[in-house]
Amino acid sequence: MILVRVDDFPHTKGEPQHTLDAFRAFNRELNVLTDNKRYLLGVIPKRCNIDDVIFLRNETDCAIGMHGIAHSESDLDRYQNEFPQHMTQLEVRRIMLETKSGMESAIGRRSYVYMPPRNLIDQRTASILNEIGFENYTSGPETDIQVLQRFAFNIHSTFPHEYGRTDEMLTRGSHDVLIERSNDGVVVLTLHWTWETNIGLKHMKEFFSRIPKKHFGDFP
Image 1 (cartoon, rainbow, N blue to C red):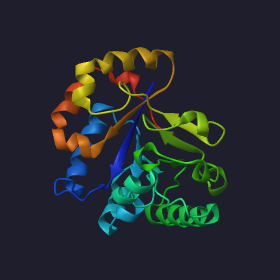
Image 2 (cartoon, rainbow, N blue to C red):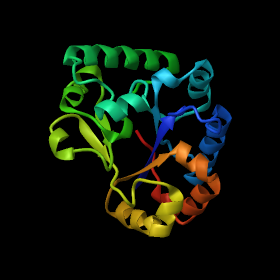
Image 3 (cartoon, helix red, strand yellow):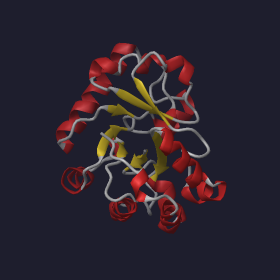
Image 4 (cartoon, rainbow, N blue to C red):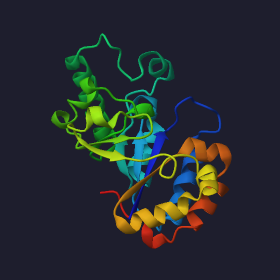
């Protein structure tokens, strides 16, 4: 079974093409391509405005993941994770819990997955996930899985066939690999809606058209 994960709602850099209407188009197309299977959406709480929240509450049925706090590009460049090294675990816990609670209340849905920006998370953050209500965390090419394997259950996507842009994955034949892997168990395909919008949704349509809809499943 193939489960779909989508990162970066509502945006990461505020680029003009990454509008709520553009996401509506992406969401509508993805639902058609997967036969309306529920996907996991990485929501960045501090980047959401009231329109984004109303959209998520009233127009979607996706599983809500917390994609960091603000997904600050400068902080990620500087610290290699979202929280400065001098910040104590207690401070990180307070910020994470307050943000999680506020997001859940606004959207009206529980968030059980933490999705660290750029797939970068340290032990200080990972070790508090369970106690504040996160059952899972996502990871990707940049994650040090060995360091984090004893914490919350990991939802991993492996590069190059489970993580990337659909135009590049199509060229690599990733659709065939995903079909094969889905026959043996659960595989998580990670997309970034911003990347797909940048290259045009026609590439996502072409990629997904190579995978029979029966292979897609609902995120819990």
